[in-house]
Image (cartoon, rainbow, N blue to C red):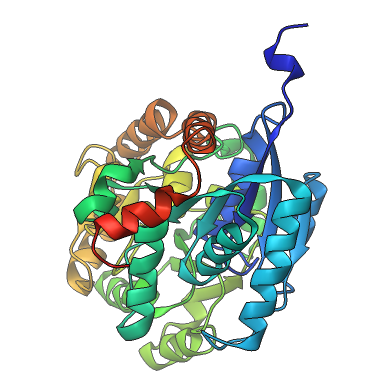
Length: 392
């Protein structure tokens, strides 16, 4: 038996936001799926109870600890959660703490300092959207972390933190997300669609920054411009779950829009589409975009965040300005009515994902970060980095 096979796996504690469907959560599931369990033992710590991803995490054989954090930024609940987490770090001998989003990250950082165990890796997977005190706390997380991982070059922090930052693009399971022409008819039938429908879809949280309303406005324009067989599928949940159907009704397109909510069968939904649209106003590197490209769908994406890093304009997809209803409608019309162009872009998109954005390669790079951080000098690394930035 080799010496490496005798090593005790290092414990990595993952701190995601709520366990609901979203890009960060799907990223976490990919990491848990491909993480080398001979080298790393994962624990998932959720600040909130509930969430439909609980079963998926537990089914993967990963320990899940759910805290019960309230909504206030600073509270007795948060102090209790820090103490509870610090005790867990000691008993599980946690060596690496992978945090996503600022609030669970604050708990992870404070618990690591209190337990004197665990180097912190802060993950940034979307453009910062917080304001005021919350923005300062988000910035503090980056400055206190021993290492920062971002999924797009555009998200790299400035200042001293840049030297502690690794750019590791998102990755998708290209076996799960692949072209499925053999199930297209069945997928459409299950969704109440006909073979003749032109089907456009999007996947993402139903919140303002995702720009889903812009897609609905573009759809209304397309119906008037000569796509009477257009159908729009919207996958996801969020604070706009009631507002978006109301907007579709006001636009007179409610019969052409299907709100599917969160789905566990996204590969099958993608198989029913003709065109995928990512209408985001801000973005990091979108898992949903990569999944659609891996499925060989022609994509229309806004030229924000990491999207231009993934989509080569007119080679692997079409880029449009954010909030530009006319440009989005024109791009969708072109792909929906040009099957040869759509097929060419889709095939090129699939090749790009296979070559650059596979989930296994992404996880191997993350593992290298975890190992390097665990082997680094004692915990003061994060605090020293923050002091170098002049913020503590």
